[in-house]
Image 1 (cartoon, rainbow, N blue to C red):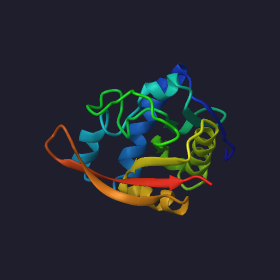
Image 2: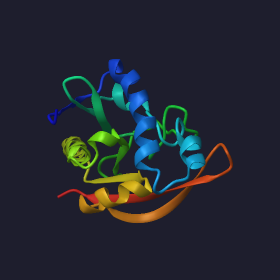
Image 3: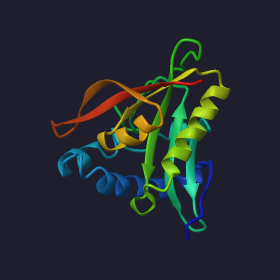
Image 4: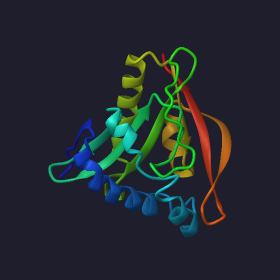
Length: 179
């Protein structure tokens, strides 16, 4: 079963996304973050922001029987985080002067490195451009940097995100200018 398709996420997808995200983080981030960092980040830094679903800016990759990846973009100021993130800012961005945000990209480990992340990213870029945005930014996990770099994103700075357990999670703010 190798076929999948992209579609906008709906509220009905939330249970599947809540199962997918921790699985993706625990497997695909294990080489770059410790177990304690991943567990502390799940649900706050790394997780689902349902505002993206309500804004119709969040996509899922679907096979015949499962959601195997997700990711989206936002026209709101929040750079990263889930519904429970302490850094949520739901104010709208100005497409003429501010970059849209790429948010919450996760792939099922069994479906990694099959072009799904790249396809979701391209869909996000196209949708943001259609809304007038000329640049995009993200807070990339360390494991995601190779994909985003190949897709034209450049690192701007490393952010040490405080975690509830007292540790930090390094992420890299990256940016791409759309053509």
